[in-house]
Image (cartoon, rainbow, N blue to C red):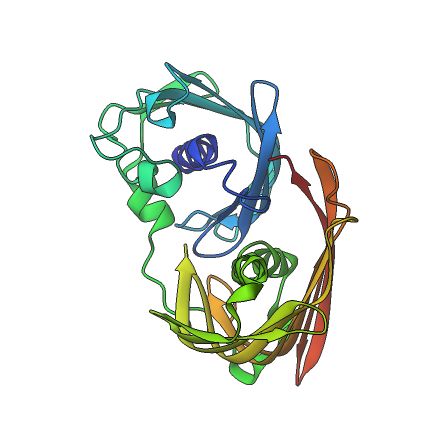
Length: 313
């Protein structure tokens, strides 16, 4: 448990920033998600049902701090994580996770990178973990390949009957923070290139037909995708459209509507949605705590999530 918390803390410490407004998320492949933002001297990370494997699931918020010899994340040498974290292991009741420190990090040579791509180059033989005054080597079950690269498919968590009741808040957060951000990013890029006119994008997942709405000067995307892995255990497929129902640059308000046959799975119960509304607002100055509203609809019911995300770059 302590070793897995240390690896999760290192993943947060070396994860990217500055690539876009909505890049401060880290999916826990088996289930759950971590979101993070910068604080003086480190990052604040919020764990939502983060399944790190072998039955270890972490919830709550904590501060992650590190030492490194330069601004290059590959020079990170130690991390610490401490805060209001709760952990459960298998069927045990939740209990408080005490502060965890880890040191002895080194990475194999490779091109400049960050995030999971860098974590995968961690040399684990010299890593030492400290908790409650005890010092011990990194547990073999906590190596990055075991924590962040489990073997998953789009139906790893089957959901007979497409029951919406199986969706937990951590699943809704995952949808809001990863698949919907990925689709919104594609839609945003096409909005910036609206002058291209109608065209078709061919991707490894399938095709996207882009059709401009000249009355609003905004695009509509028509996806025909097989189950497409978006990274870290999130899959999206089906035949569906995505468009902005509101795109207001002055107020910082965005609302994307996705309609059709939308299959989502991997690190969450397999679901087929008929509509997903994703709305974020109040992004006018940075940093800001931006509200996110997610509404998912299936033939068997619907769910809504209202939360906030710290946007700081």
